[in-house]
Length: 245
Image (cartoon, rainbow, N blue to C red; front, side, top):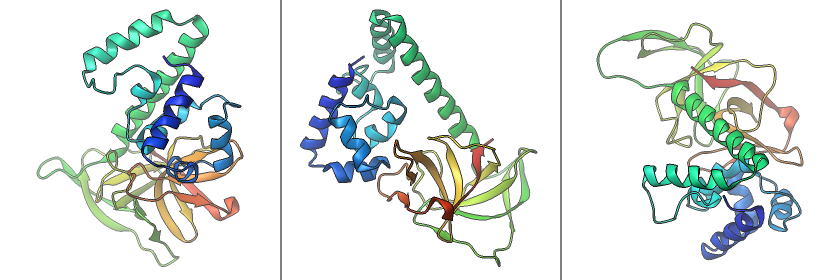
């Protein structure tokens, strides 16, 4: 696994080769420029929990940034062997850091795989009433006149969700697709990196929540073709819940 300095040097090199400014990179990863500067100045350690966002912004993979994958190698077997070999060379503290990161990635993958219901073409379907539409794009306007409507989804459906929404748009691909239904659960607290249903400035979104070190929030699009939504007024944002199965 690369050291913090090696990770930052690699990110700087990728950024310069792709002619991406610090401001543009901050926009792509949903982070304040001031916070990003501290990482690139090496006054703070690189946030491993945000590595997916940096990999997508710089057109590479998290494994390559961490040093687990040769840029030219795409073999899953090779990657696993490299991870095991490198992990065995780390001290206990760094092994725990790698384990914590891996567990978080696995948990996110499981949630992403479970939280969206895809529409089948034939059997085992049921009709449910959804609460409205969430934008996986640039925003879906909501008002007090929005009415629930019925859609057909695979059966069975979860029985403990608080909201069901139809997705409109492709900003959350490859995990969430246009026309699918996502189930939302209310929670008491929200964490950085969760996929949330949010209302901001009169529009409803399905986005990944990112909170930087300065306390600023951003609704992040997983598809780099779509912009992130910067939250300038935290009091004006309402979080409905998190995507779940």
